[in-house]
Image (cartoon, rainbow, N blue to C red; front, side):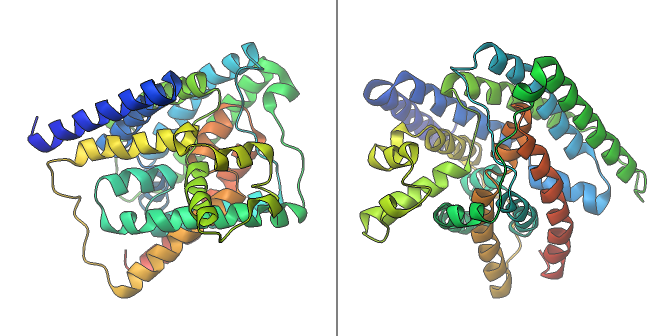
Length: 364
């Protein structure tokens, strides 16, 4: 182990100890879980965005198959846990709404242009990739502004959140979830049949990553009492800065005046569940990066930088409207039985079809 990595490991150990001593054992455990998530995402280059783009451009389904495996394992464990502990554990439920439709569609396009979703932006920033490092603060700003405007968007039309677990029971929720995943797998297989170059349908590294991420995501549910999320932490960071600078009054805002969010603004950021796992993901990616050169990235033009940063802002804004990104809406939504997760996937994939074209147009 090189000196840089040894020093970083020591710093992370000290920070985990600080959380254990000064905050809570849960926050310390969540930070360690976040490190594990970052190590898997960065070490195995498990990209939700890349998996979709490879299917669209190259008709390579291996990344999507790995994501389906992740969803299947997480759902098979999470749904029974939620049924057994309905008061202790919460599902990632979001309301079907105009904001969900618009947000998911825009997010799908923006993540292809920015080459990263919520988790992808985090771990690639941790790997020292310049564009993603610049996108991260814009993602946070967009997430905050999306939360500020969310009340207006919801007034355009919404339904109550739909839980498959509540509507169909445990058996019904499991059946519906696995039928849905089988349909997605079938569509991916059909799409890949037109590939000009034959490729292996399965990638061993990605499949191992899927299993590990599923286990870590379920563990996060058990420890935190809520599913793995990314976006909320980004918005909270910016909201705290805006409030401290007297640029924002949360008491008159529909979203931030709600009791849970108002409390998050008043208390230490180290008490926020999503923030701690986000910091862990960054730390895990830094462990992979330390002592190495940054992933190669061709020199970008001024226009490419501008388009990429704008896409990063839209990532944050749209993810708040859509009640999550690939993690919060897709992985956590589908694995805990939320209808909005399925709606998100369909709209986000349609957005990705456009996003891939836009990305190619600007020469990324």
